[in-house]
Length: 302
Image (cartoon, rainbow, N blue to C red; front, side):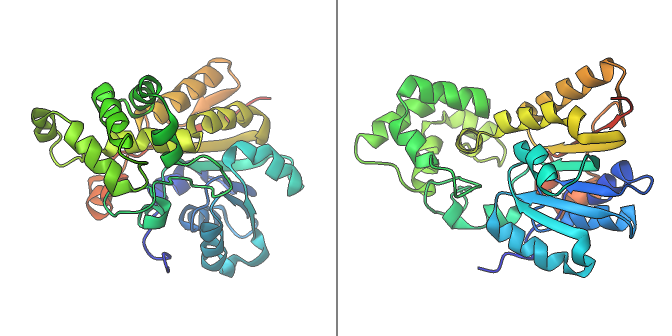
């Protein structure tokens, strides 16, 4: 499946402007995807810069290699999660990053691939792994987790107020046989939703938050983000800049708290006090960008 033309880098211009105001040398894109942000950073940083790109998705790395081939050996790509950034820098023989970017969103091309099971808009296996080396799938979670723990999971990671109704419906449905398809699960969640609440959602599918919760748990997303935030003071150069794009409140809260805490030590400063969000024009052209928030920070002392 050719998925090379179905993803638009969110806040592309804002990323380049906030992270590359001078001419940084070492650029690290922790979630290189198919190379949209990487290209923007390389173009903004100038010809003396190099990009270290990381991704857990082999397909994305293949596409990034193709899309960034005109930069030649200025681009080095690694299959790794952003929680492993320090390991990748050591492998690349790089002491620190002048610019670091992490886009925490799922690529549109990944969402569009039904075999990944990330979307309820097309039916596919209930997988949700962004890295196929992981062993636990969403099907494992919905079929093996007891009802109470499943409800807690959906509430905590999906911020879903009807988590107990949804978990009860899932537990009842799996007694008839294992849940294996995204369409199957989405329909169970929709039926569990009270009718008035369905109407209040105004076009947002009731399955959205449950799918978010399962994806976060399958991929240990918040734990890996916490590890990256913990690493930042060590892996950024003095005067280096880090930017993180989040897409829901759980991620943004972690980033905000970490950045505020770090800046309070006097060793870093926030680039902007409030997160940068997409323009109305960008949202019209790319509706999936509407919830994006970019926060950036500058390391000013060791």
